[in-house]
Length: 78
Image 1 (cartoon, rainbow, N blue to C red):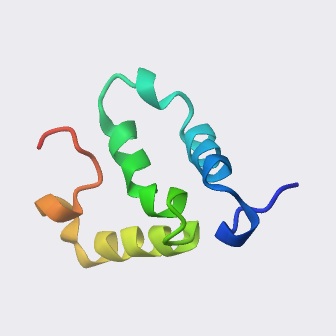
Image 2: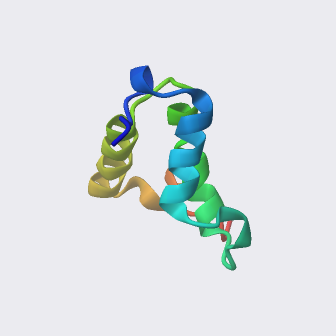
Image 3: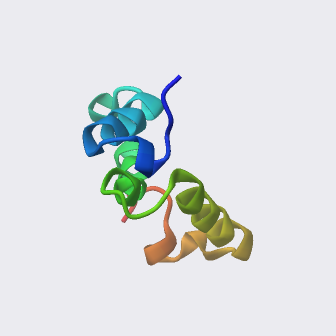
């Protein structure tokens, strides 16, 4: 099984990992999947590991920041 760490993957592999994780991103009906996929852009670009992005997301949720524009988990409704 291939690794998911930045050091073990190419940019193309990381993009494929994100796309496969969310399914067919471009065919979503409510606009949320594209916003979630954008959240992982730092992973695709090799700047942050997946677990770091998930921890940041969860921290905003726990603090109650999800209703603020900069912390919104879904781009729908902006």
